[in-house]
Length: 493
Image 1 (tube, rainbow, N blue to C red):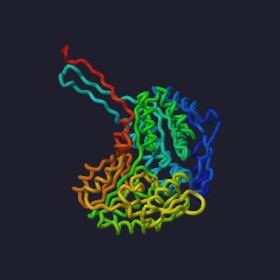
Image 2: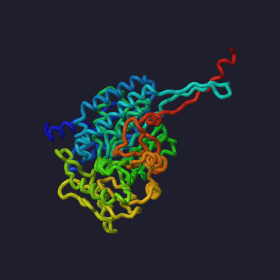
Image 3: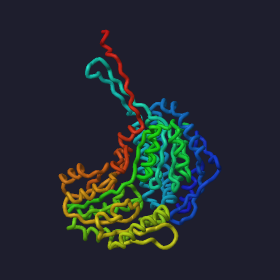
Image 4: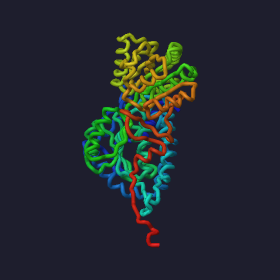
């Protein structure tokens, strides 16, 4: 199979219209926006540009379908998700290529996201039939307490550009399993994967109105009226902290329930007793996965002063050997940054550090030619409060800072207002347990490079968000608990 053939099949997989109430249609104003290939800067497709009227039409459809979908048997909901899981795997090559084309990640990483993203469909297919309440006597014995789990209701999902399949499946899978109808507003930069996913849901038989998708170039004009409407009952957003904070304020007026998976600034800590080979490999993987464009990517590296020189040199050597290029090409390790604006932000952070005396061991520059490429970069001689250390980079840049004691590094880690993920490498189990209790993060990897799994709760604390996605906890975000009190049935016996 040629790459040209795969690209053509991938693009053919994705509709370019809105999907509302079970029909593919143009936007109310019949306008479209361009979706670019970050490896070339060229236009891949033009997608229907949703309007306020389209957003409210999608809400109308979700509200109309809510009661019947909530009454659909859990097993039936689960079987539809299972069918979608299988269909996504059948189309794995096309989905992977589509993500490479519109987002930039190398094809093998696209295939990895297909596996990861589809797993949420299988996981929540199984969780759909495990929604339980309880029945128990009150402590006084005069009541019987019955609790029911009911779907929250119509949901709005605003997803990011960096994992366009997994972020959709993680939200939609949980909501559908719980009996909620949905509106998906994909990222402007990467709408094609979400459109292809919704097409799969249509193909496997998800009823009209249960899933709606409204891509748009003007997110606020579409999502604002939906949130303010009063019929929306749930918003789940993945993206930056400032946008998440603004959305939470909007939701307060109508008391819309929220889940927020926001920014990260994950510390990666290497203690003096760590396995250095494993630590360097893990640092390489967790920094460069998705070109560093991941909220749970290692963002700041704290290395014990006894190891920092060797660790830095070895990480820089591994970065320098990587092949940067179009993710569809054979042998490419690191694809393009998603946009020219994002690349400029990365370059500005690195140049700012360099101007203040930081040392760039490798990389630190844009690649010449077409596309939005930035070389994998290792930076040392940084102060703990340097902007490159304290800012979420969202790119292939590893800033390294030395530390001397456990207390010192815990203080540096916890100084951030973010608290999504963290990584610790140590040979001491006692230290690992101490760090699990001391570090202010929602997720912690011990001697590992990845912590994401459909069976585990994903989410952070502090300014990194509220709520959890995935795991048995994930479906609870889409359920309300109702209490019914019965008089003691033995009172008249």
